[in-house]
Image 1 (cartoon, helix red, strand yellow):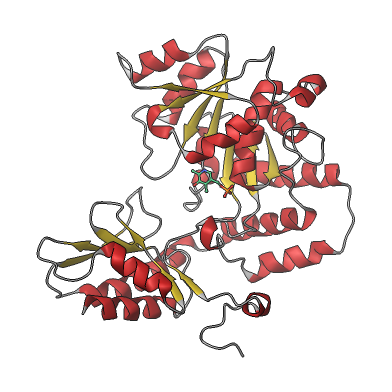
Image 2 (spheres, protein in one colour):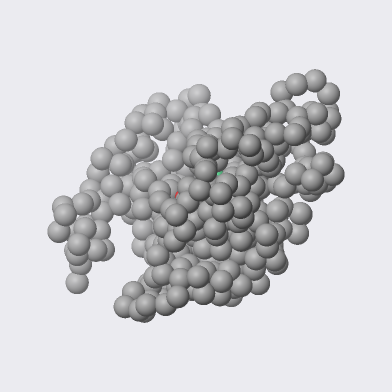
Length: 376
Ligand SMILES: *Cc1c(COP(=O)(O)O)cnc(C)c1O
């Protein structure tokens, strides 16, 4: 029996860590996501084994290929490692000398084109492999004209990022058409785009040459995993540029038990009832927004289907006649509490939001109660 303020882990309790209630979604800083029982079981089950790692990678890749509709797949060490090996694959390919040479790209095509609104912190992963980023999208003419003009003899790939707040008026399909006409591959980051499950196949169907997803966000596998899917020759190149091979991706190791677990997570994800889960999330968001109803200066809403939100999100907008503490002050008070409750602020002006996707049964009520105290 654990106490109300136990983290849920004897190990972490022993380290003196505080219990965290995560209303911010699957963020690495709070531990990513929770592994469901079958995923934990697969991890433990694989831990006391030896296997041929190349064969494991091959079989795991076949499972990923089947679920994504791609020619091939690979388990990677997080979507970040997915980006790193995407870059390595489009620059060095399967050439043994080039693989050993990275991150020195002398003699290789080494520029990755990136749309101006797709610039993000994770682009360092492409650079880690040795790539140089070349921005496009702020010049003259239509976006299609600008992209076409940006492609030259140094272009190794065009990157396309799917993430909140990072939309591009040129669709992936349109970008693919332009890039492929010049024989340039398109590499996609869809790290946090699962669910919806349709996205597993969507980007591949749109013509992406490689796409990566996080294993430790909505898939609920280990935080240190991701999946990569795409063209067989490029996935093979990615595999050669990664652990267990001595290569630029050697530090991005994914262990056998992590591979077992992310496959279990994938199996669970594709066969689960996503609508039922969405309904549960909606219910939690309703009980959270309820505490803001009828309070002067607060406008509580559930935002469902907003591409910049994950899941049906409880949002409180602070209007001009709000007389209480700011959203940031409330966020700080809640995170300093015990348990430490994490909520988001400021996505759209002065607002506070609670994403339900990482909450568990019983936690929405605790978040609601804590917010009620701050609101009244
Ligand atoms: C989370 C995220 C990543 C990194 O994924 P990890 O699996 O944590 O390595 C990369 N890109 C985007 C857009 C993300 O949201």
